[in-house]
Amino acid sequence: MSRNVSVVVTDDLDGSAGAETVSFGLDGVAYEIDLNEVNRARLGSALEPFIHAGRRVQRSNRSRGAGRRPAPTTDRAAIRTWAKEAGLQVSERGRISSEVMRQYEAVH
Image (cartoon, rainbow, N blue to C red; front, side, top):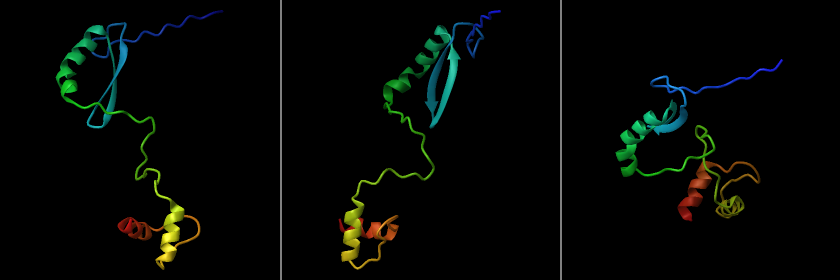
């Protein structure tokens, strides 16, 4: 026995068939809505003055973790060497304390 399954995407506003998913965002929240050509054009017309006046922002593919910092761009070995020469206590491996980092950044 064979089975043929059809998926019909309907417009979220008026229920008509032949809709496509449209993504948009507002206030840092991403939304998706299924719209037919007419309603998609209505949305585009309504947003056009704001899009024209706004700035385009590239979206990151990575999700943002809470409190996550960007990868360090400083040479950790150089910081350790500087800290030892400055008489500060710093471990050979692992995390460098924020106080040592702050002092290093203040000098450099």
